[in-house]
Length: 221
Figure 1: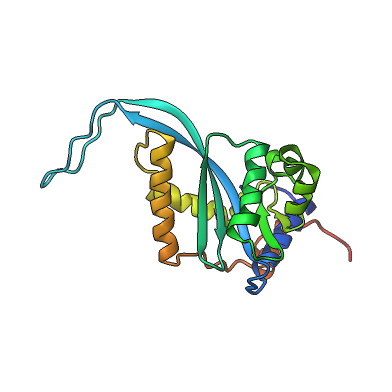
Figure 2 (figure 1 turned 90 degrees about the horizontal axis):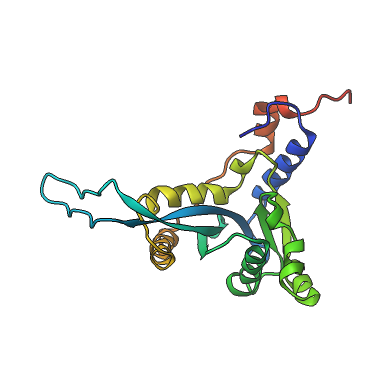
């Protein structure tokens, strides 16, 4: 969704993210896009009927809801790498632990990790001070450079594109519990990483200033 009127705040965050996407690859400062998505857990009431020649597998229309889980997506487009972390919740504490995992597990050798994310209130740097002692929070944040997509501009986050692919390719079936969800998502992740799938981002600041000109405030200078 794009705001219907001029917005200096929108174009500031828009151009900031687009500038980040134009930076050349540098293994010491990897680019990681981060986003999240809830997913419904659904258990079959009756076993599906297996496929037979001329007849696909059939599912009963009845099902039982088993609550929800949350999917945190880490996506490094220049490395063609992604990781999906399954959690029961999506709190500030969960976000803080995702950032520590990013720093200590996924990119321990990086000097600074450039993280593109949205402006959700649970995704702020303050979350790390709620989750960890100040020294630990500061240690993690000193390794991260945050850049924020504009409000109403989630389409600028490449992690959202990956979540869309995940939904189409992996979540288009009934998954009853967190354990199976982790297995299914892990298999999808491994296959997509092995194939070096990525996003070829081509929308630039110059494109934005032409195609989204109506969003830029009018100035006399």
